[in-house]
Image 1 (tube, rainbow, N blue to C red):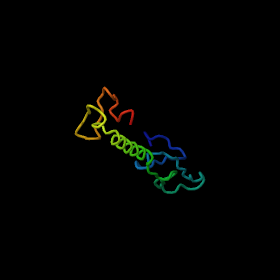
Image 2: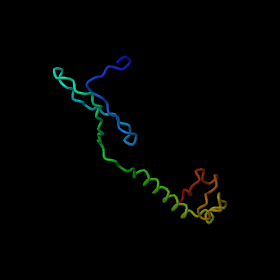
Image 3: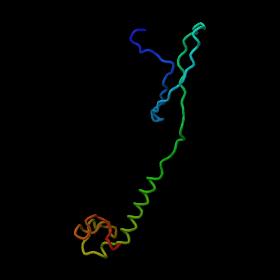
Image 4: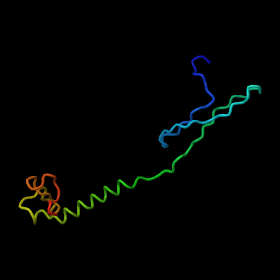
Length: 111
């Protein structure tokens, strides 16, 4: 037909969005030229799974460990007891040291 690109012997199969839109070639058997042409059937697409689905867990574990360690060091730091002035005093012993003592807003270097 006019306007359609010429077809080759192979077609491309596209996986759905939930499988990361990976494109895999799919071979289709072509009948020999001497045999009568059968009725045109729609192309058959099959889903190819190469990898097992996995759950990301390593980064959330590192983030959680860092948050827990930060809370523990802020508890040990106890700014109101060890410093003259503190930032965010409503946090009690979890309050921060002033910028003059610690410019990074965290526990003291001695902690």
